[in-house]
Every structure is written in C-alpha cells, then in structure tokens.
Length: 359
Image (cartoon, rainbow, N blue to C red):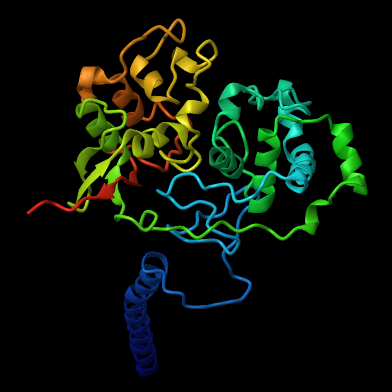
C-alpha cells in the first residue's frame, strides 16, 4: 500500500514539475518569436544566409543623393544630366555597335520602330527619327535608356555602362542610323571595338546652383501653380516661398519648362511630357504641345500650329485647371509605379534661387 502511495505521489510531483516547466516555456518561446519576427534580432549568422535577388527581380533603388563610382549620372531633383561625351567618330562608332546589340531588335535598324519583334509587342516601339525624340535633350534620352518606360521598354542601366548609354544617345541624335550589316562589319574589328575606351564620368554636380544663390525646394505642382497664378510670365521671374520658408524666385524657362521636357521628374522612370505632347500636333497626344511656352498657353486639341485649343491652365486658377487634374491624379505622365503615392504638391524639386529680403 505504501509503495502504491509513493508511486502516486511521485507521479503527481513529476506531472506538476512538467506542467510548471511547460508554463515557464510558453512565455520564453513567445518572447523568442517576438524578438525574431517582430524585433528581428539576428540570433544566428551564417555566411550562406545573405540578401539576394530572385530571378527577374529588380535591385533595390539607390539611396537618395548617392553617387555611383562612375559618376553622378542622375540625382533626384537635379534634372536631366548633361552629356559629357562628344559626338565624335569614336563615340558614334561605339553607339552604332551598341544600338545594334541592344536597341535594333525593337526600334529597327534605321530607328523607325519596325524591329523584328515590334509586331509582337503590346505597344509599338517609338520612332527614334521622329521630331519628338530628336528634339528631346540628350539627358532625357539618356534617362529613358537608363530607366526604361514602365510597361513598354526595359531599363538598360544593368546592361550598359553610363559611357555606353551616352554613345547610344549620340548615335540616335546623329541622324545616321544604319542597317545591321554595317554594324556587323564593325563587330568584326573594322571599326573601334567597344571595350577600348575608359568609361566616362559626369562632371561634378554643383549643389549650390552654379556658384550663385542657393537653390530652393518646392513641390513641382506648387511651382507650376504659382507660375500660372502669377499670370504665366515668359521671362519675368515670379516669387515663391519654398518648403523651408525661404524667399525665392523662379523663371519659366529655367524652372517651369523642364517639368514638361525632362524625364524622371514626376517619378523615377517618368518619360518627359513633351515626348507625347510636342510640336508635331498631327501626331501629338491630344494635339497638344508642352515643349514650348507658346504651346502650353495654346492648350489642347489644336487644329494646327496657328490655332488655339482648349485652355489647360484653368483661366489662371490652377486648381481648377485640366493640367492640375491630370498631374495630381496620376493620369499624366503614364506608368506611375504603385509604390509611389500621389501628392497634390507633386515631387519636391530644386528650383529657382533664394533672394535676399529687403529690410
């Protein structure tokens, strides 16, 4: 009887100990899960456990204002870069080779948008000989090659060095796009081979505005609105207060027009508005020219260059204008990535210059 009692007491004690241990283990396990999953403490480190990219996954964007080792090809808010490469014979030869390898399959050997795969694409490739493309700045074309066009053209920044992209820009702007058999001869060594030149670097970026007054920061939509409500002056500066409260002034040519003619202003990868809305009114989207002062004021749905169209500036009331509606709702430019939210002020840009207030 005593043995049975002893076994019974022993089993009850053992169960209590086990139960107590389980109760103590539950918060310990929960705490470990919280620190690992929520706080994400790196408890164990193995060299084989490293960040990686899945197939077809784009790398993470570079940090703001960072400069790659081969030069500041683009810094957010600084506008399109200047072309540092002279369009000499060597650059055009390199551009010819690189165009045939990377571009001709879609845009065609002569740049007409009739490459061998063009018929299989959802949207027809751009005609690189068109007025809209040829009138675009070198920096605009460089950024289109770099970042692509969302939904229509892949980004080539991982395929081509900055120097190679500038060579292609020079070749496209040369007006002498040639058939692939000429380029094939170049690949056989009859012309300057691609790898022989040192990659180019961009000139240093002057963040103070060319050694003059400090630049100002303001939302792109706010800047256009202030220009509109100031009476749309063409050459006279108009005042504004930047996001830091500084007194500033801007001009149409230096600060407003680039918002329509430069790429990557509204979001990374954004194509310049003037790529679709340009002086070729017969082909321009909405028969509208956003590449010039006169074109912007003339409006949309124009029958010819001498005719006025529909007012897009709201009669001087910016928030009532068609242009404000299109830009603030993301209808223009096309292809805004889902992870970039809309903002009624637009992206903050560097524009204008600070002015000293009179005492």
